[in-house]
Image 1: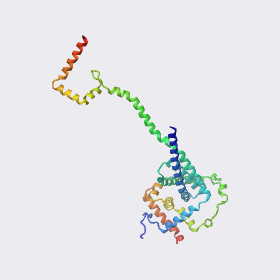
Image 2: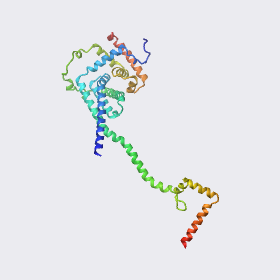
Image 3: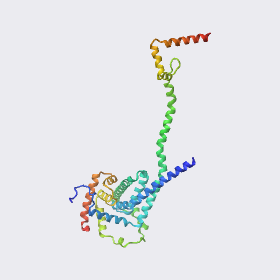
Image 4: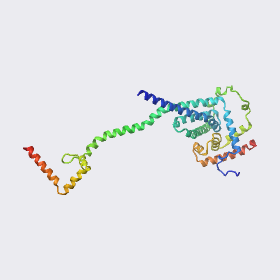
Length: 140
Length: 196
């Protein structure tokens, strides 16, 4: 087996030297005395207790941005909604809102009325006559 | 609804217990090796204990919510930072102390009577016969440059792969390979006689 190049990984196949070193180091770990083990044990329990205390507070913190976003959205909607509603509704001369005109345009029958109008305005003549006759009957 | 909220609490508690158990298991698995790594770097038992304890707490505080498979590199990264801080502090303290005309007994140097008390642990014969090879290995490890020592300990004792070691050390995988190879060369040169 050729020697590894400078800086080449040697992890694929640990050499005998590495294996023996590992065994020795692990043996050293097993020899750690009771005092050290006891203190490590205490430190571990303190850390686990710390982590167990953490979630409740952590969850509250993690919920804060979402709650803030919802509150901000509600506030913005509350402040902007009435103004935007008033400013966007445009009233026509007859007092109808443009929303009603949109309904007419969306209605297929309305397009027939338009085409009738271009054909000679028969509908409007009829509507004017109707209006006049109503006014006359009301006035009488 | 009381039953639902009770159920939520139970679910939350069981989740917490489960993650606590996982964290406890992880820390129990690494604490002894981490102590040996810190001891090799700091050459002082109590400092090594402090470093490991701090690393455990930091992991629990900052990363316990992370997936368990990320804990090991993170833990050793924290430990490495802690070791480096302690070494820097020690260096600064050494410089300051060298300027003082008189050095009284430092509080840190006071002997802990509990630590000095004779141990009543059962002493297996093997423990009493500390092998020459083990001592030579420890001396050789302590003589290694810090990065080489760290890479060697993480790779050999803790069994981290190259990528995990790189994460733990905050360096590239290429650096890890280079440090590891140099550490091996150095140890081979020093310990060759003990291995034959």
